[in-house]
Length: 258
Image 1: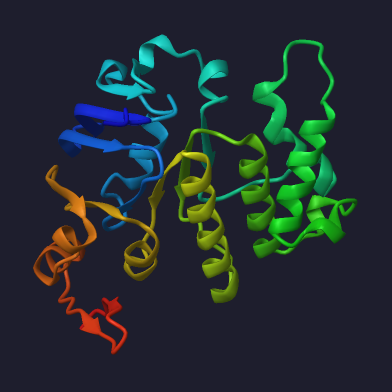
Image 2: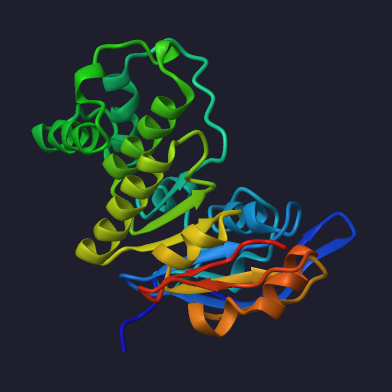
């Protein structure tokens, strides 16, 4: 059996006195895509940040590549885990090319310049997100959707073993939502990495992720395959409104709220 890239063992997520999730056990193996669903404040972002040492948590209960988080320095972790934040702030003046190259920083040794391979990775990432013609543009001149695509290109340039995506469809039109998630799905399957995506979009999660973690907001959760977790009753409980699935002739399921 393939060892998981990330594993949590009875993890407790808590903000102040409020328990977001208790006794959380989940794994993401190479090639696997896991969606984290739940209402605002249920713990989706907290979970992603905890996996990257950005939130206070019992780090011995999180394992990356078989080692507890306590044994990873932030610098070492950055070579294995990359995150797409929900909101990206580009306050420093920089070009699109300079920004995408930041993805290679965790992999560079001290006092070492970028290699030809580093530049090749960055150029390829800009091309596949459709920004290669904007390489010399200042980031401040980009639209919100273009900045989101640039952040995704920088993440691809980083080339981590574990992709953490916090609302990856933010600011993207429908076409780029589908293109981006297809791209990330193919990347994970081809290079044996794993992906954990926090999202509000049940339909995108159903289409692009093979595993689901559904947070109920009261400390409880359910996790498993799409068909096991994405049930009308479980979704209605998690979101506090009636959700009933609709099946198309092709067998695709959609989950509108009533």
